[in-house]
Structure formats: C-alpha cells, structure tokens
Length: 315
Image (cartoon, rainbow, N blue to C red; front, side, top):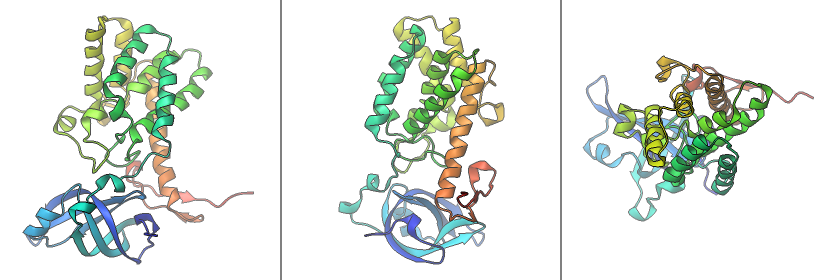
C-alpha cells in the first residue's frame, strides 16, 4: 500500500504522487529563481523549495498539478519539509487533483442533515428566512469548500465541519447564559463564514480569488444578508437584521484581525469566542496527531508558533 506524506519520518526517503497545493515563484539571493511549494495528499501537507528553477520547471510545476515526488523528509527550524531529489509531472490520465485533497472527518450527508435540522429550529422568522435563502444560494459550495487556505479546516468539507462544530458548541453554551438569544447566536454562527464560498477558489489547491483578497469574506456575507432582505422584501434597517449583520461583521473580534467592528452584543462576543476555540483546538489536535506521547509537536503557525506537549495517558 502506498505510503502517504504523514507516514514518513524525518530523514526517510520518499517517492510518491502528490498534489502541488501552491507554487510561488521567488527570487533567490544569487539572482536565480526558486519555487516555494506546498505538497498535499489525503493525509495532510508539507512544504518544500525547488532551487535554481529553470523555465521548464516554472512552467511545469504549478498550483493544481499532480507530480511524482522523490526526496527526503527533513525538519528545519522545528518544521517538516521535503528536500527534493527529483520531481516530474504525471501523465494527463493521472491528473486527478481531487484524489489528493483531504476530506472532512464527517460525511457530507450527515453535515447536511444537521444543518437542515438546525435551520428548522430557528424560531425568529426574519433570521430563519435569511439563513434559508443564503444557504439555498450556496448549498453545494458550503459543504465542499474548506474553511481556510491553511491553518485550520483547510480541507474539502472543512467549512461545513467547522461551522457545524461551532453550532454544537453554541448549543451547549447558550443555555448557560440567560441573556443569550439562541436564535440569533445560531443564525450568526451558521452564516459567519459563508462568504468563504466566494473568497476562496474551492477545495482543490485552494487559493484566494481576487475579490477574496480585495474585499474579504466578512464583508461579502454582510452584502449577502442585505441582498437577501431585498429578495425577501424585508427591511434591511430593522433591528433584527442589524443584529444579524453585526454578528457576521464582528466575528473576528478585533479590528486588526479583519473585523470592521468589535463585538458589542453578548451573542457576537460568544460567536467570536466559539470561532476562536474551534479553530485553535483543531490546530492543536492536528499537531498532536503527528506527535508521539511524551514529545512536543511541531510549531503551530496559527498559534504564535507555539509547540504543544503530547502528554502520556494518566491512569
């Protein structure tokens, strides 16, 4: 059985097919070109650099291409990487990028059933109507897109799995605080990252679209809420709609992290905290999955480059 990227240990040689998730052409100090690469398969991803890349390499080794990779897994500055020995583009008949894309740990059918049930439980008619309308417009993409290009839930179905995980947290936490309007919390949670279906290119070799970089998913979903109001003949300036817009606009928490406004209602603060919790714990869980008990993980970029200790089971 063919080994996957995560199966190789440091200093172990590999010769396997992988997908080029990203390929950035850069200038080396000596004036030559090199390609900063991210390889992926269904087990995860790893970085590499192709030094002294000639014109043929620059043309062949591009984002979304499946290649046969020969090299050695190494560790550099506490991060795994591949030292490339040789690389070749596989024949057209073997160019199946989707076969190398990691998938969500829960089936699309189960995620869809959960989302349908959750939407049906929203009692407030304005919020339920807006959520139903927007999900109707993005149903397929919502369940196939990743939640991010890198860091957390960066795999097929990651957007839906991240959102569903957050809804499950919200459903557990909301009853503990009397001031929380659970309908508003669930509506905002379901919609908060929907703009990523426009911000990102899709689950295979994910990149940012131009409008994703220039506008961003936070503003995009706010626009869609207003557009949904127009189609549903709802007053976009009503308090109900304003509160829902505030939920999505403030979910990044801080202005320096891309939030146009900071949370100013309890449901928005809770949404921000739940978002942070799920993203952070997912990154830690992924790092520990590749770490033996009694050892420290590789550095987690999304968490200030910290390393996490995988403690041994305690009886």
